[in-house]
Length: 95
Image (cartoon, rainbow, N blue to C red; front, side):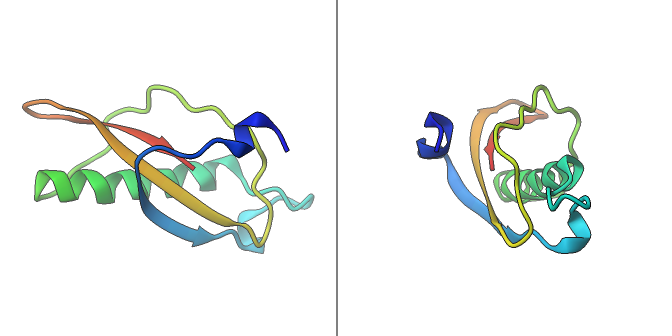
């Protein structure tokens, strides 16, 4: 287990989902795009709660994959509001 796997995520648990075979390549690794889509869903949930209305994703500043997600893994996504502007909300997201 790496040091990264031992760290406690910051923020609020916003979404939990199960990685299924349809979301994986033949080696059993879950596609990064699927993980990113789940993170986007969690971000939308958290931002919409804060905005009390509709929101859209305008940009993703950075994304780094540290560990693979396998079929059958439960993906937990944590979100934290980093900044609230007049027309934008910046979130930090960890999965």
